[in-house]
Image 1: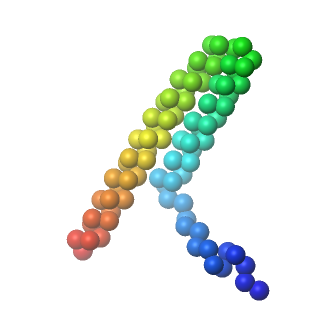
Image 2: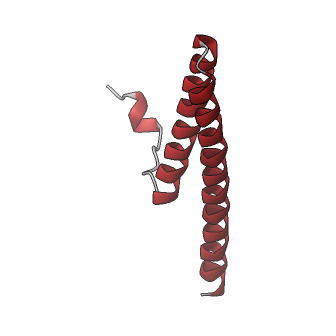
Image 3: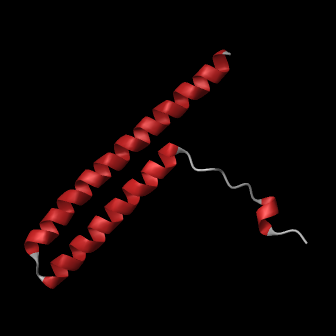
Length: 81
């Protein structure tokens, strides 16, 4: 009997994908914990987590741009061959 996995091709993760997932997870974690600390009344930790969130978002955007540029460069090199 065929399973669903026989019909779905699951791509192997690339190093760019792993970095993006980690960046998104860090952003989400910092946001969630920062909001929790805000609800608890710990303003100092909440501010630190919000700053960490901004840094993590910046890291994620830069990683995304590097991945897109790398993919475009790789596609262009394949075209030229």
